[in-house]
Amino acid sequence: MKESLSSFLVGQISFYHYDFTAQALSKLSRGFDRDIKDIEAMYKQKLFSLSNLRDCFEAIAPELIRFPSLNPDMLRSRVDNFIERCEDNLEDDQS
Image (tube, rainbow, N blue to C red; front, side):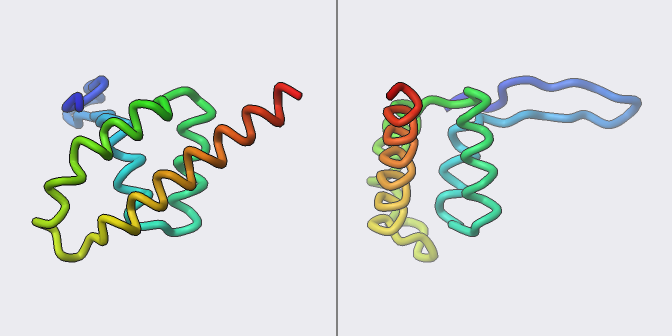
């Protein structure tokens, strides 16, 4: 995963746009309605791809045991469900 997509300076304040796929995974792990809406908006803006989301989850999945507050099975389910919904919406849009 990329450390940051871009950064810029305004006055003495630096702003960073971190890897959107990592942000999506983080928001999926929390699972709040607002987070899901954020992820949907990020996806619609093409800030990450579904294949990269799945690949990044698979890359971190073996290490999730180190984080007891995260349930790997729940996160996998949320990732899979999000991808499935997006793919279904894409098919509906093409019909």
